[in-house]
Image (tube, rainbow, N blue to C red; front, side, top):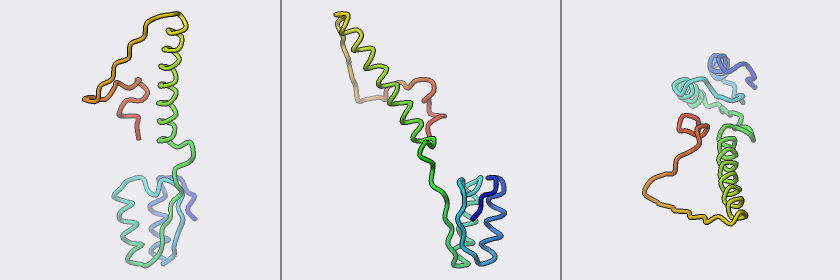
Length: 111
């Protein structure tokens, strides 16, 4: 089991694989995709198994989904408040382009 800091994962894991041992690695498997491919190729040649911890329950994908759901609920709450005040609400939808996301959900932050 490799529980070292991420920067050491490749070196420690590669030594383990080269010794003919299977291993289970803490996430991320390696720091780069190239290192991961090299590690998995070596494991294939040695006939050993390599496993890696899954993303945690509150990993980045689920956190993004939670922020998006909170944003949708905020919009719905605004519609409810306007309706309670007797205001006319008009909602238009289109399918030709995606809606703008809040600043904290811009493309760079979505995994």
